[in-house]
Image (cartoon, rainbow, N blue to C red; front, side):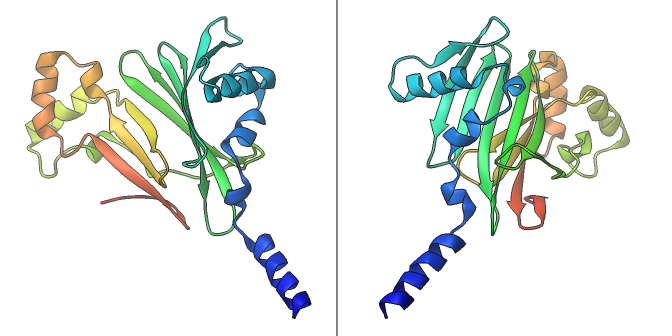
Length: 211
């Protein structure tokens, strides 16, 4: 009976999802240095200062300062302001058997645009593809030909800011046209939009748009 109990305990531990053993701190510290222009020791100091409520910033390799905005182990989430115009988000996601890391690099000047990438916990790239986001993704259906030409013109180029919905399996894609359009142009465009944000959810077969 005792041997059977020990076996069941060991089996449970071995089958327990990898994500439960994957910490934001460990993944962040093992990140390649050139992703944030910070040495591992600098990233370690940044977390220590933040947890001890001392300071939330540290000098990076570009003679600027990196500010830790949010660090939440329970939500598997970390957010950093890399410069006055740049930001970085990292979140650990889990599927049925393992975990993976999502990162977002964003630049706002003033409209925000983002790059999204996914990795294994030891920073090997994963080829997850997101559904394509176009101007039409944000527009009302059945617009008149004139309104369609107007909207496509105002949304070219299209700037999209991605962000993780902290602690969930959701990724938000927000059209940031308001940030760079003239006020008069935005007043023309806004009534033609069905939404300013699109939500994607990670499922076992990849990222799917929530309708």
